[in-house]
Each structure stands twice: as structure tokens, then as C-alpha cells.
Length: 191
View 1 (tube, rainbow, N blue to C red):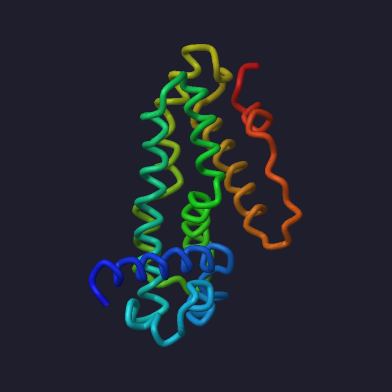
View 2: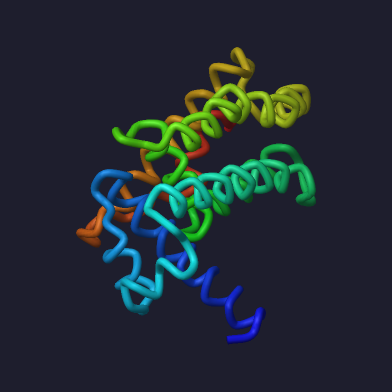
């Protein structure tokens, strides 16, 4: 298998791993589940990752980077601060990005998480998300788009709601319907 195909297979495994770990947590995930989700044999998985810990740590590193980039993405969007937050919310709640954030949540809350993954999580705390969004919220408040309350509390409330929605949507029962983003953002908007 050439390097390009090997890299594609590794990405396929990582995509499957994020999906399984983000829904089942560290302890609830078996490598055979990841292999099944990736559509490969259980043994082949070990050609790419030496252990469940190795795969999980790699996924946490990737998820941390992706979540940081997603938060930075908001500042590159056109529009007012509120419009940027609206697009960020839509992006975070999309299936691909929510899996990264859910994996981080699982790494923070699951038992048995490898120490190296715990160290990565400690480097990028919830307050770092708050810090990333603070200038955007403050600018929105100055423009009168976002309610005049403590910006750190607003962001914490926003992130809590978003996290809860991601957890609800990750359940496999298929009955959960994501709320309208405009209704959701009423928690921070002036209107």
C-alpha cells in the first residue's frame, strides 16, 4: 500500500474512532467497534495504532486542534459579531465538528482515560474557549447586538447549552431534533 493510501486508511480509522469514542466514551469503546465502524478487520487496525490508548490520545490531539481552529474560524467569517456567532454555532452543531467537541467532553468526563490524554485536556480548559470568544462577545455588546451582561457568564451559558445539545444529538435513538439556531441564540441576543 502506498503512502497516500496508507494515510487515507489512517484517516478512515480516525474518523471512525472519533465517532465511536465520542458516543461511547473511553471505557465503553472497544477497538473492534472502531474497526467495524471503519469497515476494516480488527487486526488491520493495529497496523495503524498500537493500542486503544494510542488511538484515543491521537484522536484527542486532533480534536483539540480542530476545536481550536473552529473557534478561530468565527473571527474569519464575514458579518457582525452576532452573525459570526450564529455561523459558529451552526458549524459546531454540524455532525463533523460536534464529534470533535464531544470527544473532548468524553476525555474530560470518562473514567479510565489515559494520563497523556488527560494532560492534553488540562492544557485546553473550558476557560480557554471562553477566552477565545470574549472579544467577539464584547464587540457584539458594544454594537448593541448582544445583551449587556457579564460576557464570561454569557459565553459559559452559551457553551453549556451547545454542549448539552451536542450530547442530546449524539444519542442514537434518532428522535432528537436540533432547535432552530435563531431561537437558541436568544440567550445572548438583544432582540
